[in-house]
Length: 431
Image (tube, rainbow, N blue to C red; front, side, top):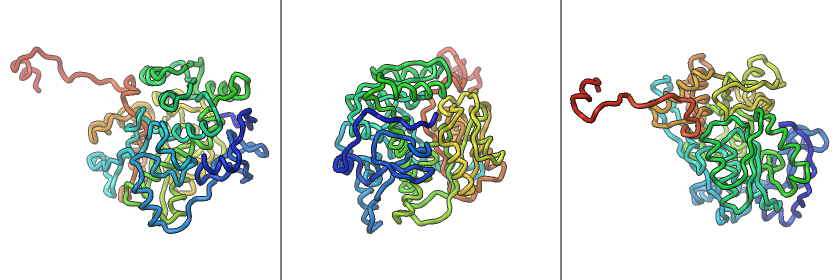
């Protein structure tokens, strides 16, 4: 994303309305210089152009009482409303109620990979539009409501377009989303079916994103909430719920190791933020954890920077079947590097052949049909184990962020045999 400070023509909420609309959130804070700004539809610091993120006054007091409050909440992300920039009555509003997806104990996959310490797959294909993007959009929709936006928009590699279209339809908002012109058919159909405008842009995701950054400053963009541009600080907070759920589903404990796909890098950085918040609140024991980033070889700018020991991520032109991760200029790339190095993790990549092998492996061992991004995380997990960088004796969580039905073109599969309806034919086929 091209980082720029944008003045919005939409009014910023007053202190009183912010307190009711954004729960424990109190300000936007620059990740670079630390300066704070009022809660509003902004995403870059006007002083240093660093990215803004939501700052909180999180609930203090008895961790056990907070834990019980969370556990008594709904079986979706709104159980964590006390930790999110949303109103207290968010669960009663029309939304898609994503989250609390399965944490699958992947014993069969663990045996294949030689993992002895416990291997889990956080399977976010169970969300309403079958990807983790429903989490981030749900938070962005609440911010859009608070700021009075009438149109919900985004630049997308596919999954986000569908999530925005569905969430806008449910919330009664107009949607207009922008995608690269050559996305997988399944994702195009899923983005279009909700009745909003879907616009294909001739170019890569980075071209789409630049266009959206221009549109937001144009009169035609007035009243539009771009979930991953002017609503990006709120949108990003939805990824924290992955960290919350994983820890709760593990019995309120941190995973030792977690493997996260990297596109823009926002998901990985917010998972780390969520884990740190749980520690600060006393909801989990403070102990070391390692975060690993996973990219496709055909779009691996963060992996390349990590291996080369660089602090700067150099943009690349994507060329991979993992189109949901095909962001050549990842906005949060430098922060992914910081987290991987701070936690003792790594950022690694795998080629398209290993991505497909990993999709098949996960399906064969655990009955989970992952989209290509899930093939990337499983493939990278396997590579890290082979290289000795992932400890097989520790509890490891691997993310699958989407459904394989969205990326059918990546995997060739069909009937084992086609036979006449007779036992003789069945026997002759050797089945």
